[in-house]
Image (cartoon, rainbow, N blue to C red; front, top):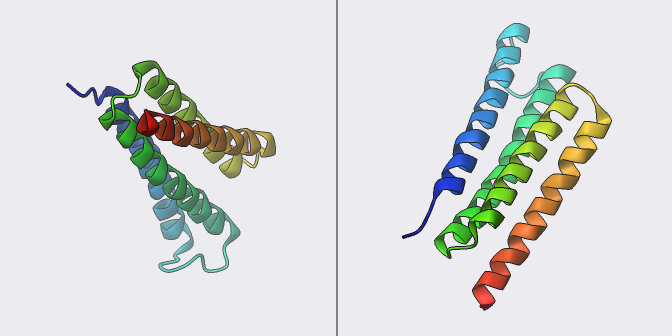
Amino acid sequence: MINFHWFALFAALNGLLLLLLTINVSRLRMKHRISYGDGGNRELMLAIRVHANGVEQVVIFGLVLLALALLRAPQWLQEALVVGFTLSRLAHAYGMLGRVHRMRQLGAAVTYLAQAVAVVALLLVLLG
């Protein structure tokens, strides 16, 4: 039987993060009365970019993680990837929204590392 525990946890936690980032964009749209685009508002532009970056990273990582689960990759690997990636996305969002450059850099670096490890692991599982 295939164990989807780590993939499901990934989907729940990263889905929640993206939901919160979406709510932040909506909040700023209402606050500044901007329906479309960013209206030249720097705060809204940043919130939109943070949300978009999350979507860009979460979707592809989720697909790779799902493939690892379907191919029965070791649970410890799935766990490490989910925890590392999710923490990296939290750090990145916090770093961008809070303008803490080091957190943004750390979040981006760990995101890239988790993606690289996941892709290499997937290739290794596929190749046997």
